[in-house]
Image 1 (cartoon, each protein chain N blue to C red):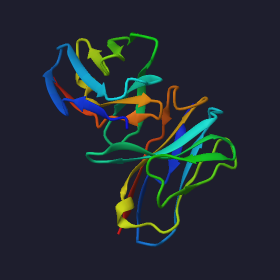
Image 2: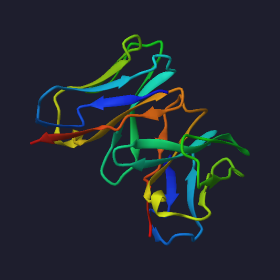
Image 3: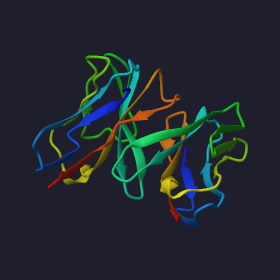
Image 4: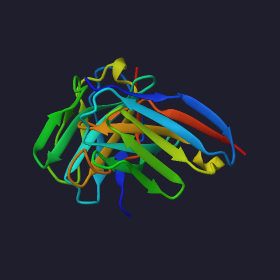
Length: 113
Length: 108
């Protein structure tokens, strides 16, 4: 089944403790991206990647890192999480770019205490 | 800076009604517009994608229109069903800017 998977689905952590949220797609998509969704603010893009080893900042990249060492994986790294990073995170992928049909993962709900 | 607005924020209709959801954007220089559905606790599912050169797209009971010059798109849902209850989001490219969504409840 074609899908985007994220792990973990739910995470509670404390300020400053490094964490990684994994994202994997099995559709051989070139383009992958991360979003956060907050009440009243909608979805905002954090980072995106056009291809392996090619990443770029979205609208709200501060406090986040990403890597794209393999085509299928696009992990989101929070080196030192803070409470304002409490949010619902989505990974998405598409065949070539943001202008095509996006396939979203199920989301990761993060709480930073 | 592109801004995307969806009105209304919430809508409740009885089953069987036809309804229209609205999406407006401030910069008409868009590449395309997508409509998504989001169910509680789940990710987004793409419903329709309209290229900037198109005026509408249809999929089953859904019809999306695009008027670039006026900065508007509508999602028409025919003969609504309780299973249509979800949050509907529109997003415009060039950078996939999302609206805040319309929460739809279809009452049986």
